[in-house]
Amino acid sequence: MKKRPAIPWATAVQVKPLVQARTAMGDFASADLGPELRLDLPPFPGHLIPIRTAPPRPRASTPPSATAGTDAEKLNAPLIAPQLTAQESAVAQQQTTQSLSIAEKNLDSARGKTLNAAQSDLVSKIRGFVKDAREAVQIADWSRARSLAKKAQVLSEELAGSL
Image 1 (cartoon, rainbow, N blue to C red):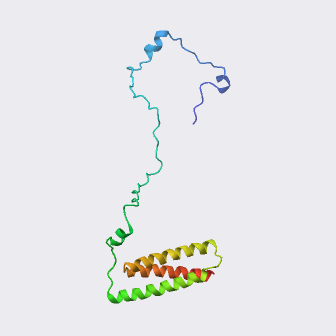
Image 2: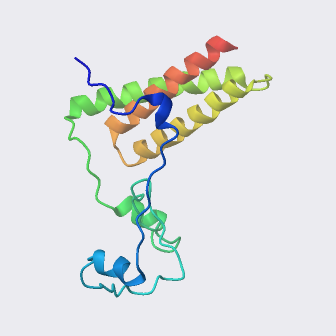
Image 3: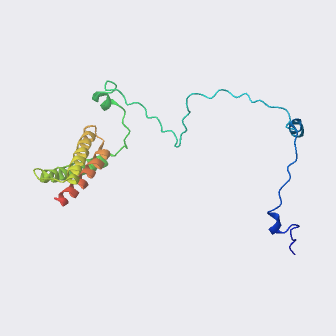
């Protein structure tokens, strides 16, 4: 059961609250605020501190200067390569030579033709792989030379198919 208000709503509008008279001293005496606290804060710095929203990027080491390493030093540097048996080396050498000749033959077929951007990009990549394969051949890294020559061959076949 709902309790009915003591004053009907129709007459509630006519009722005005009574304001109690206060004295000037009474306001401070009745308000027990406790001890006054002072906060000693350091002065606000004139500049703002930036807030990072992403983690800091890793710092890259500085590239070596041009005088730090010459081609002779690079060739004399220790090389980590899988050790192949004499038979494996002979097979890798044969596969390298075969892949390089196929790649160069396909490059020659594209010479003198008008190439689109994708084909020009392929030619550039093929030449890079052929160059790297020949460098690996010079230092007798046959597994690396075979891998690079095979990449050049596959890309050159793709180029020849698109001509």
